[in-house]
Structure formats: structure tokens, C-alpha cells
Image (cartoon, rainbow, N blue to C red; front, side, top):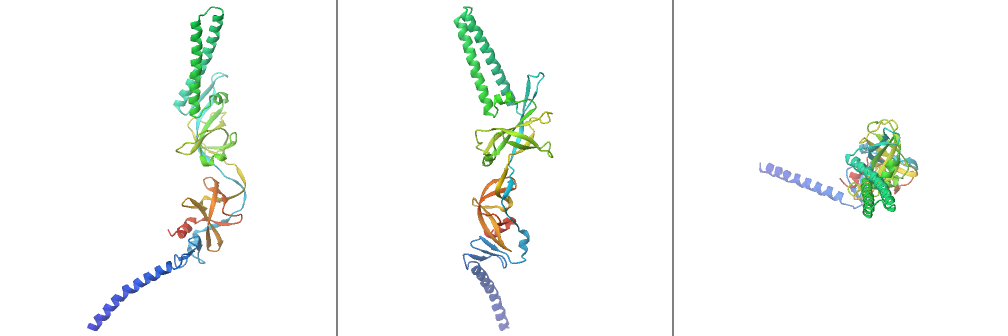
Length: 331
């Protein structure tokens, strides 16, 4: 009976010893080399995570797709959100224009500007009349001084109204020179994409109210300041609207993109970002992937131009980059 108990006790002590030994062996195998670690029994990660090798027919390869990158002419769309801020239409007479704004405050400001402009005209004419009367001794010096003061005050008021309009993005002279049957849109272009915008360039416009149609407009004005919060710049676009389809406040998106020649363009899904640096994975052979640092250029919602890091004819991972990132950085 004692012999049996002794054997049972020894076997019970041996089990945890074996488990502990196995645990130590695994850890030693993992830390055996700084350049090569065994992530699993199949996938090998080496060169400090920069190189990943899958065995043939590994199930993980089904989640990874790659394609060859070639230089060529591409169209990078640069979309910016926008809205209709003003419509210019004909008034009751051929000389009148009706301008409707999406903001009551802007409408009130523009009305004050027109009143101030009219007042300048009236005070100038009155000053001319008083000056003529003064020469003919039909008006006193006091009358002349008052007329001069009124004319100067009217000009100061007009300058103030124009300054306030310009501050909110409207040039009064452009409003006055714009033909009826025109709408204005304001868009918010990211600071990083401002290089894609040129004053006077043709742009494509897509309205939420007309999702299946594309309209053409022209960038007529680029803002002078960058919004410190959104890092965007106001760009105004003019578009013909002879039938009055578009209303103040309507939302749209504007494409400022232009064709680019001799560019390497890859999907955004190919790019991973770690500590502020951008990388892609090159497929060197079947099941062999290498992490490569890249410098990126202009991008849109789904694609980005690569300026440095990969070459024409390289095969890059287009799907599954997140999986490879997890293996590279042991996530």
C-alpha cells in the first residue's frame, strides 16, 4: 500500500515539472535570436518584423492579395464638401438682379452694403450741388462743410460694409458682375490638397439632390486664410443655372482632381502607418512578404500616389496588409 502511494505521489510531482519545462523551452525558442522568431509552428517572422514567410498552402494566404504596380496616367479625385451659398437670378426689370443667400446674416449684410453704396452716390451728388451753389454764393460755408462731411461719412460706411462682406467670403464687385442664372458654391478644401486647386480651373460637381448627374463649374476664388481648427481653405465655385434648379443651402461635393502622368498609384488599403511612418508590403515570392517604408503624395478617398519607396513593376499587397502588420509588430 505504501509503495502504491509513493508512486502516485511521484507521478503527481512529475506533471508540473514537465509543464514548467515545456514552458521554459518555448520561451527560450522564441528569444533564441533577435532576427528570427517563431510566431507559430508555420509562419516565420524575421529581420525584426520586416520579413514574413508563410508555408505553402497556409490558410492565412487566402486573406492576402497582391498586384503589380505600373506607372501611368491616373486620375486622382480630390473631393471637397460644399453647399450653395448664393443664387443670382433676374429681377422684375432687365437691369435688376435678385441675389438669394443661404445665410440671413449675409443677406442683411449685403443689403446694408447696397444701401451704403446708394448713400455714397446721393451724398456725392449733393456735394456737387452745394459746391456749385457755393461758387454762385447761393450756399454758405457751413452748408459746404456739412455736405463734405456727409460724403466722407458715406464712403467710410461703404468701406466698412465691403470689408465685412469680404471677411465672410464675398467680393461685392464679383457679385455685381455675375450674370443672372448663376449659383455660387463654397467648398472646404483640405490644406494638404490645396495644391490641386487652381483659380479658373473647371471642376465637377455632384449634388445630393441629383445623385446620378454630374455638373460642371469653375473655381473663381481661393480663400486667403486656413481655418485653424479644420485645416481647410474656402474655395468658391461658380456654376450656370439657367433654369433655377438649385437652391441656396443645397449640399454637394466638388472634385478638383486633375489627370497625373507617370505616377505610381496604390490603394489606401495597401498602406499601414506606424509611429507616423507609412509602409507597404512587397510580395517577393509565393508566401514571402517584405515591409517597405514609403513616402506618399496626393490621395483621394481610395487611392494614393507613392513618391518614394517602391518601383515600377513591384508587387504589393492590396488586401491583408493589416494581417501582416499584426505579425510584424506581434499584435
